[in-house]
Length: 266
Image (tube, rainbow, N blue to C red; front, side, top):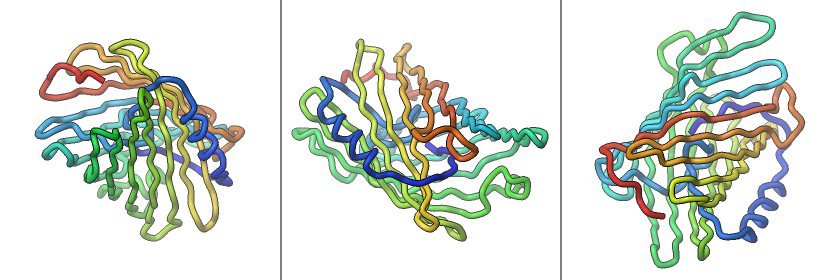
């Protein structure tokens, strides 16, 4: 899932601290993907669709950027491959100008879960994603970046008894701009058979100049009835809010699993 961001100094110890605290938490279950920024090795299944429709606000001290909506479509080829298309209708608001609207960058991805050991509960996937502009004037109006980019991340999940962790790390190549990195971790707990709550720490940034943004989020998934799952998430920057650090980020939407089938038992 794409994240709108600006950057300040990256502090890698924060991610390491969260990972350490996660390993010591009580019985939990977690899963990446919407409504969170961190992805996981999971795929929809052969010839199944996972469609996520969400409203995503990013609020800064001097502007707001919202995905209204964000459309994330995934299709399974076999049990370990996922094809992904994502885009959004963007609304950009600055105090000094009228709101701007436009289509975001197309994000095309292929996820391959190349390692999956059910006995140990450990899985790894690779999920390259290419972001390209549409032939419109979103770039000229400052709604989307000028450059195409390619994300090259690895996703991991590990079951530690009743604990399930998901984390992701990768490289972001920008064609004519500053390339960078991304990293995130999600941990959660099933309160009931249908209700899952989660916490996430996510960071992204650039190498040259060395900048970064880290956010912390909490959210939930509620299985309403096949094929509908409610997705909610809210959070903010770890750093004090500013023109580059969001005072609020969120995801409010619905997931559709098609064709409908009974929800899997965790």
